[in-house]
Amino acid sequence: MKPEEIESDLRSIDGVVGQILGMFDNNLSILSSSSFPEIPYIPIGDMKCLVSWDSQKSEDRDKTVKNVTQLKTKRGCYKRRKNATTHTNIVSNPIDDGYAWRKYGQKSILKATHQRSYYRCTHKVDQGCEATKQVQMTEDNPPNYKITYNGHHTCKHLLRSQIILDYPDTNDTSIILNFETNGFIQNKQIDPSLSSTINKRKEGFPSLGLKHNQTSSSDHYLSVQVSKAPKDLEPVSMISHAMDQENMISTEVYLPTSGTHGYDEIDDLIDNIVFSELFKLCS
DNA sequence: AAAATTTGACCTTT
DNA sequence: AAAGGTCAAATTTT
Image (cartoon, rainbow, N blue to C red; front, side, top):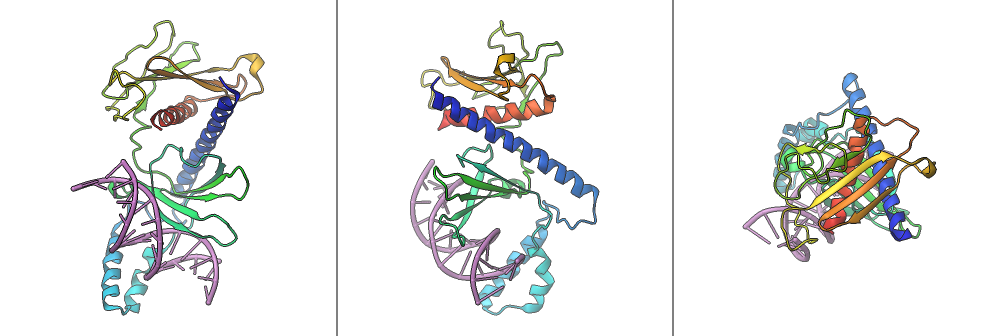
């Protein structure tokens, strides 16, 4: 593998770690805000307020006269969630963060040469997901992107979370994950020599329209192997390398031999890597 | 045809 | 009042 490929892989892993940390951050904030009801918090799914306000607003526009009294009574609807969870990180590639975003605005920002872009979750309308992010290109070159995430995703992210992992109850520390890009999978084993369990999914995995393999339509595999890093690799925390075989992409990730990793953590990690690999495949 | 982006107006916050 | 954030009609892309 070329050094620059390895480097870019490491960078993407770095981003993934940032995202995982962000998720923990989010989850903690969610937990704390729900256990302390006195903190002002507007429920995410509460759309009634917005709907009635919107209709009022368009009437006002037609009359070109604003009804101040009604504005005041509806004003609560505009209140920003003061304690909404935010998390920012700097990233070299702003595209691949595993969520589906819809751009809804772009602004010039004072003392910034580049404009700031505003995104909201694609599933805001169909699932009421209120997650939002801003992307701001930094001044330095090569350019980086400061990404500010607001709120958390309440949507089902179709690509990422339908993957259910079963873990070996043996001392085997490696996990193999594989799935078809079309249709379903039922405990299919990709390589019997790898003594690992195979996951299965609850629901069908949506077709990704891979350009990668024209000859056969439905038998693509992605395998992710997570294992303890060999001693001589420390203190490198993680190394991932991916290789193409016929219609299989396989990625290996080493976790540090020291340090403790719960299955949830590894689950998240794999989730992210899987997504990121798929993303590469499709682009 | 449907979904995503662009862009200026509109709204809130500072 | 100025700056930042959001809406939504027009436009472009899929």
